[in-house]
Image (tube, rainbow, N blue to C red):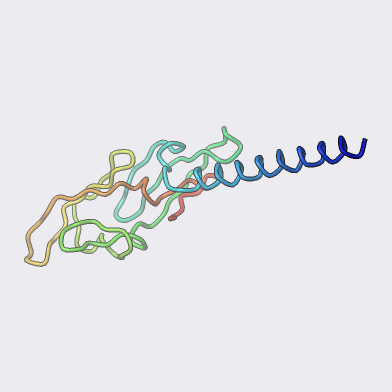
Length: 132
């Protein structure tokens, strides 16, 4: 009887560990970018990305925005993550769902068309746009 009880306990512990591991992986997957999968009416005005995003309950939508100038810069005419204030040297800024497009000045003063995939680092966390 003790052997059966130990086997049952070990099985429960194993199942619990698997469920806990799966939850960790799923939460990380949903938290890593890909905001466009759960947001609608995505648009940019200046440096602000705005959208209607789904909350964690799966049906409530929330209006939200994030200032991309805090996370995106202009690196010699190319939009790049990890820098700041791209909107000071980029023009005709627009978005097509998850792709941010702009014409940016390079070091020589030429205007260069450039794009950046916002899904790489912008996430929807319970209806709020966040950088990750």
